[in-house]
Image (cartoon, rainbow, N blue to C red):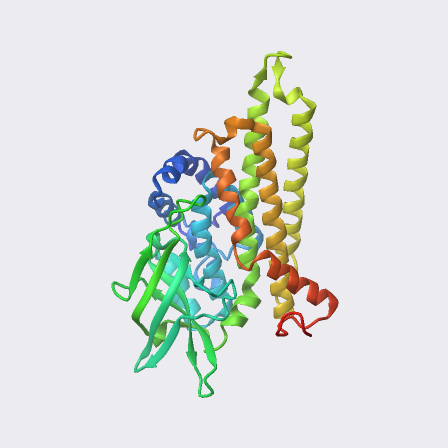
Length: 390
């Protein structure tokens, strides 16, 4: 199903079609710690991975709202698959937003089946992705990169890598930069395969970049513009990330409701759904899902173009923090409703419970986000150092 065809793809409908199929193998991939290659291949085949290719490059140019709704549906089937492909679809949208030659070739590569994995997390960076510690040394024809990357989600299924690094200017100050490169055969080494409690099938490996030569033609944007790329395009990232966890919460609510409607307690001879305690908790779950979706929707439909980049980044970060907290609370309530059976490996709720925790850990950290938001509200300089001065 090509996005360049005369008939536009309905990506939400496509997600509804794919999610049940992905759900069938979610438990196996979670148990075996395997990357869902067959899911990613299906996402490429159906054109899902090309949804954020803009019309000028032969795509449908799916809106942020459509992307986020589709990702919620997909995450309800297999959260790891949704989280892994999110690195691709939102990264492509941010690159496309820049325009220029790098955007054009990236979009055309995706239309031809390319899959992008992003590598911006690094040890010691703490979520401040516009300050990469990976060093780029300028050489003839390009750059040589050395550094380490963590949480390189989707790496096993990627054909292209979206990388950050920094070179030094004449004053000795770092100039952050980004590259989108075909996955190289040398210069990139997996130092630790992903083995975690949640999002186990995302292939979020740790990597070492060792004398990795990158041709200058693979550079995205201008030297030093990486922070602006993040801030101006962050709505594509944080809204779609948050959508994955809202999708888990929605699926958890639906699962708990179905279970409690069918589970009969012998004392009353009726389904558990008749118990007030169950009703109260399910009502609270539903209210939190509604609150999460409302905050997400407000962020999706906010102004994203004519905005102050820093305030925009903080606003989107606050939304991501709030929504992922609510999603976690929903699934936690669901575990309380299910009781001990919810911990059984046969119950998908235990996987949702482990997966949804990842939303609380996606940088920037909650305390940093709240500090930024508080300083903005109080008109205190955000980047004053030490942090309590300003």
